[in-house]
Image (tube, rainbow, N blue to C red):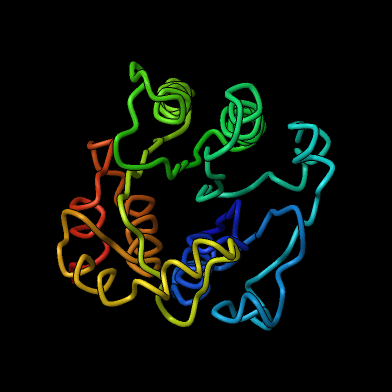
Length: 231
């Protein structure tokens, strides 16, 4: 199958890209991002893989407009979308533009060109379209909009704590510092499958729902672990 990954340079995105490149049934992976994958920073991803193709389009991300790329985004079986930003310090209008407008602009082009596609979106634990919390409400609205689109199937992953695995590091300096400074606590939390998952498991779980298209559309941390860790 042919897979598109948005946000492949982020911590979770690197894990997703890695598992796509390792999967024997994935024949092509298109990484769509604002900037090229860095051979040093993105060390967990084998950029030499003949499966990997990169599409670096910063202007499309800025404008939230992917219509000019429709032809290059055609002929794919799945879109894995671990792209996201922290809401800390952001006003709702800007967070909405990046989180909702960008995601739905991508999804609209994809569903028109790939009606048989499976779309897997990463939101977060506590996402709820009716929430009073800004980020939760915005992401909940994105989930609802995606599931109303005529994809073959659309899924929302709501992980809690995500641990970096296989040499992956966050590019957010503060997050990376806190993660390393509090590693003993993080490691302990990682032993609880209802609380934490990891980048490898998220990638494997995404591929599993693409292959199997289960009826359950929303997956929390425990469900993601069940999908990604079973044989």
